[in-house]
Length: 456
Image (cartoon, rainbow, N blue to C red; front, side, top):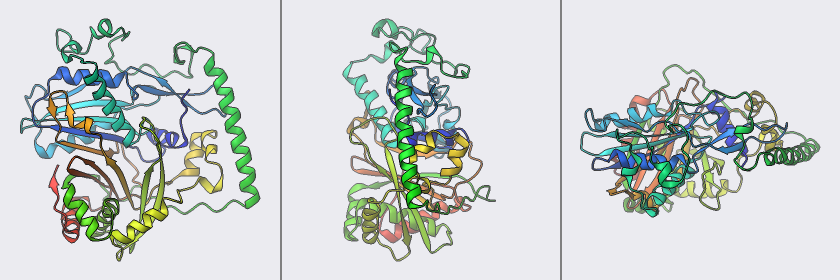
């Protein structure tokens, strides 16, 4: 049985109000209208794919929460399809920013597929999911898997619509799957604890035995690691700053594209790498946007997966950036930092965060991974994302949104970089008091590096 990792549980707590709420979002643009039947077909593949799962609680104290298959889903969300009130260019991100509400990885669907017609005749598609379900690479893998299955099975999108153009009702007979009630349902009432219906089909007792084994493993690791920490002496946790309800702080998002050859050339000309140029650019955008400190602390997520899968398979490291830094010096700082990942709280085994109450775990790990900026290099996206049914997908972006954000974190600027074909896409989310000046700050920072951004 798949169990939640420590990172999974951190994001589950943020979803439940203990920390900064985070939902991941993939955005795709095609230059022409999309048939609702194709969107329903993609929705059905996602519903029965690796994102179709939810969190269940263990029955044995000390055992980790587990993942259970869940094919219930939010209805496919179609905005202005057919195109009666299409979105203008500057309305895409405000629309996408609203799609992270109502996601529940514990008791209901943790993801949502949405699409909107655009005034230029194209279509934008958004897949939004709770960070507890997947990280950015995991979200991309889920989409690539859905599109690959759709193409490999020769699925006819028309079979995914009923006579009224609604959700699939004949798919059960065609595929042999039991869809049960209408899959576009609202979440069921929250159970007090997992009962027989919460267990995977075909394993009614294995879950209990697995809980006992997992609890034994967890407690053994925690007791051994705690004893080792006590012998060394528990270090003082690093200080963190949490601005909280800072007056004037707002959320401002933007998406930019860059020619990949020009980006790589600019990095090489400064003896840097595409990644260190990315970090350098995000830091300088923050300074240009009014950040007053001489040193910027950057949080750098590191992909740790050894195979494609939908999980939070990442670690986090950090570097300090000063104004004299160049892409070359940041290349060396980043390489060194990747060898020393952020450690567990106060030197204790990180598994302790999974056996103590959520509020205690939140207090012990509060602010973990939060620095002045976040630079998440998602990497090169699979070519399978470039084709959606009969459509060529010319623009893809991955980013995070913060639904229901009330208390602002330390992080003031988050950057997400991805590459598809000959284009880099940079998604920026500003959480600073100067969000309205972000565009001017981007222009100045790009000019200093010789980069020419284009709208997404």
